Length: 157
Image 1 (cartoon, rainbow, N blue to C red):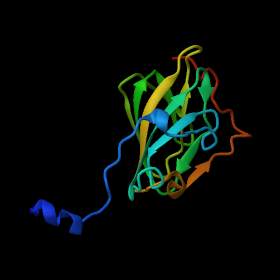
Image 2 (cartoon, helix red, strand yellow):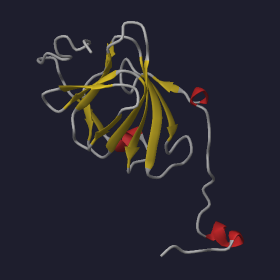
Image 3 (cartoon, helix red, strand yellow):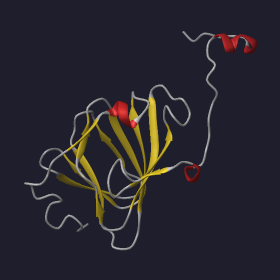
């Protein structure tokens, strides 16, 4: 059952203030996932989050990131502007994700994302569940030096 408290007693339960900001106010990370432009807007550094890491990613035209997995976090994405291509699992199964697509990658699932357009950016919002930062998510990149990745005709929608 939910607990009710008087407003003046609320500070005894929590003291972390809410935070709001615009993605343009957050430093763009271009090193974490090469070739992607990521703004981590909610995490332990920006707003002292304890269990949520959330951001916005821009995938430049005709770009594919390195496949990876998160050892300690689920990843969820929502495609704001697409289409985006997701590559899922060890076999890099191609999934076309038009604007409005939700995509879920449980912890440990190999995944990658790509933009098949030659001219337009893809934009998505993502979150890592249960962790406050990209470091806590423990990303592991896949060495595809001996694999054909991205697959042939990856940019055909």
